[in-house]
Length: 252
Ligand code: SF4
Ligand code: F3S
Ligand code: FES
Image 1 (cartoon, protein in one colour):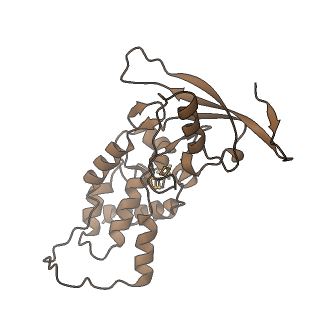
Image 2: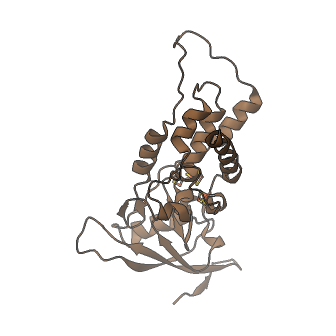
């Protein structure tokens, strides 16, 4: 039962929150996925990350969830918050109801409770898409790098803001159906390296990487990725642009 208390010397009521967590330990054969409810008092400026830490410190030290930066930078605290992918460290409890349901991101390997192995998938996708600068130029460590136009550097930086949180994959219906789909995060990476003048790869080379149904032609424009990306990356625009470019190469 959720009750409303009043803070001392304060007219603001303090809410009591019921946080339901989907718990499961895949390493334990006896573990059965189930929702476990925890009650805590909401504090001023409380984030889900703070709430989960309080639960772990005062009620259940076995609760598993990930965090590193607590500032929306590392991408490790992504989870389903009332069914929607988001970052626990950037979600204020006051923006949610008094009953909050948390579950691990779907699609990724479950480590336990709210902890999933996004890193393994991100690394595999980066290797598959070769997300590094390919340059045939001789490397002279003493040579100054050619300056880049500020507008171009800005455009590359904009796409580099991806924190590999996995929210776009968790929010994409295609990714749930097609195991090898590279998703918005993968397509965003390709868009970033296509833009970079230091990368010698041709459009045909990029077509080899994403010109199929596991790449840009598998995307069904569902736009869940665009809606849930916590960094507000221009995913919709980038995917549409890549699709147009790749379609022209495919027809050539
Ligand atoms: Fe997260 Fe957005 Fe990067 Fe997807 S594109 S991994 S949602 S930051
Ligand atoms: Fe998925 Fe985003 Fe395309 S949600 S289908 S990658 S537009
Ligand atoms: Fe780093 Fe949330 S803890 S993004």
